[in-house]
Structures are given as C-alpha cells and as structure tokens.
Amino acid sequence: MEFVRTLKALADPLRLRILASVAEQELTVGEVQEVVESVQSSVSRNLAILREAGFVQDRKEGTSVYFSLRENMPDASRELFKSLQARLAEIPEVKQDQARLGACRRRRLRQSQGYFESVAGDWERIRKSYFDDRVTSLAIEKLLPRDLTLADVGCGTGSLTFELARFAHKVIGIDLSNEMLRRARAVAKERGTRNVEFRQGDIFKLPLGSGSVDAAFCVMVLHFLPEPERAIAALCRITRPGGSVIVVDLVQHKQEWMREQMAHQWLGFDRPSIEQWFDEAGVASVDYDLTGSFAGEKLARNGNRPVEIFVARATLPVMPKLKSKKAGQ
Image 1 (cartoon, rainbow, N blue to C red):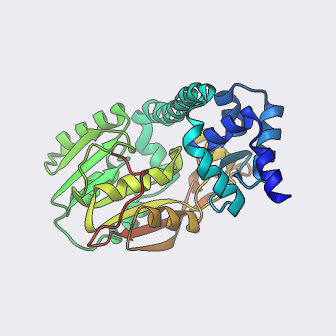
Image 2: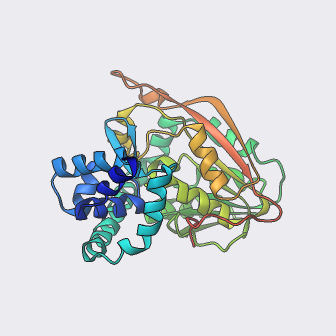
C-alpha cells in the first residue's frame, strides 16, 4: 500500500511540475505558485501530498515556509524519483517552469543587490550599528599564517579587506554591488593601499580560478543569499588544497525584522547545516565556535532582539576530494 500511495503522488501533471521545481531550488509556496502558475490552495495541497509521500521536505523560518527535495527519501520514493528525474525536463510545461524559476532566482539576487546599492553611501554607519569591529577581529584570528593571498567575498566597502591587507601579501575583494566597490576603491586610493584589488562578481560565479587563494573569507554575507550552500562550495573551489575558508554569520533565529529591514533571505543558520554544506564541498575538517558577539544590539528595540554570531573555519584537504556540483564555475 505504501508503494501504491507513492505512485499515486506522482500521478498528476501539476505535482510533477512542482517536484521538478523544488528539486532545482528551495522555494516558498508563493514562489512555487509563480513558477508553475497555479493558485495557492492547489499548490499547498499538492505540496502536502508530495511531502506525505516522502518526496519533499519543508523548513519553517520566521513567517515563511520553504520546500525542497527531501534529503533522506524513503526507499520507494528515492527509486521512483531517480527513474523519473531525467525525464522531467522532457515535459513541455517543465521547460517553461524552468524559465520562470530562473526569473525567481534573479529576483532574489536583485533584492539583495538593490539593498546594497541603495545603502552603499551609508553602509559603514549601518554596519557598525549592526555588528562591531570585533567580528572582523574574530574572523582574522581564525587565520594564523601571514603573507598569504586572500579573498574577501562580499567585501562591501572593504572594512575587512583593508584589515586583512595589513598582514596579507594580497587581498582580492569581491562584491556584486558596483557602488560598494566604487567606494572601496576610493578608500584604497585615499589610503595608498597597494596590496588590495576589488573585482565585481557574483558569489556563485566568482571571478577567480580554482585554488587561486590561500584562504577565502565570507563575513556576514550568507544570510543575504538564496542558496548559501552553493556559495560555500564556490568559496571552497577558489581555495587551494590545504587552505582555509572562514565564514562568519548569524546563528539561526526568529527575528523577522532582520528580513524586513535589512533584506536578509535567511534567518541565520544552525550548526549542522553549516557543517553539512562544508562536508558536501569536500573539506577535510570544520571548526565551529560561537563568538559571544551579537548582531543588531544597537538596533534592538520594540521587541526586536540581537542575534549571536558564529565563526566557522574549514580546512581543505591537501589532496582535494571530489567536490560538489554546486560549486561556482
């Protein structure tokens, strides 16, 4: 009976389209509606059927619920999905859905990019009200060797980039916002800092070759991204064997105001997710620590609360493992 119920879950064209969509990317109910062009009641009902059959999982974050392909599918569901996966793309409607899914991804990225373009001129004040410079120190403390080539991914106006430049051979700051980079370059010129370089680029398609830096930093960036696991894979790709990837970000929380006021796409992260994403990227080990420092302390009012910050340092193996297909190229 279990196998029959699993088969029935796939006996509907709309459910197949929904399954194909969430297999590509984690989506909210509203985003699934947009991709498959259906009404909320129908999408919710069909997602529930797919979840009960073991094909999808949900994750509640604040007031939003996200759906994705289930990681540990029951045997019957996994076997059916494997046999079906390659054929889903042959469905004409799925091809059209993929175009709308691409538009959904681009909109998510534009939301973050638009936020940073709009606040670039005031970013240093906002940054210091959100988290203090102790976070920068915590990130640097995780990197002991000196005279390295480093990447500061999501560098903004360069606060961490310039701090790293004090002891690094070279620091490459990368950001999606041209306005942030314009201001960072102006500061570099004003200070006469010669060992920094700023490049415009998407974190999922970093403008650096594989294994081209000794260490990659990503400080308070992941929560702005639609697919942080892909970002971690991309950071590992650009880091040499034996090098380090240092991520500083927010512990998982329920402070919806950070999404509303500061364009966060994720309300922090739990430790297992961070460790899993690094493991999927092929690292040798991960050290994870709570910092005792909090984001949003100066902004906490009217029920808004600050959120603790974690720091994770991953060490890549000297002999690289086979890396995740999600790594940016």
